[in-house]
Length: 87
Image 1 (cartoon, rainbow, N blue to C red):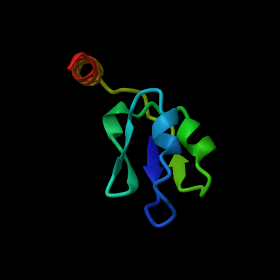
Image 2: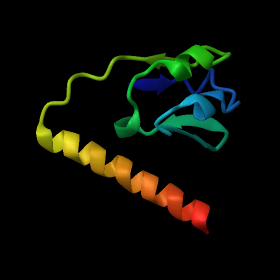
Image 3: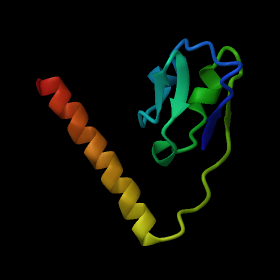
Image 4: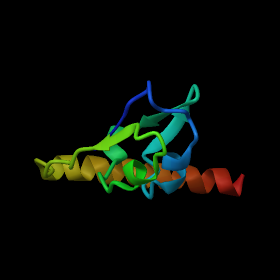
């Protein structure tokens, strides 16, 4: 899971653009991770010019219930993005 060092983060948005799961957003000029969406893929860490991102691998999901909760959140997020695009 990604962690942002807010003292190092300059708010450039590169991590936001590269995150395939849309788990990072800019808030008050700093990157913020939406924990349950983060897959731990390392793309944000790789592109950060200030080395403000560290990623620890997500532990194996503990239960089917947790898997379903995460899948539901991803689907809800995708629906909201589609609604925004459609106006």
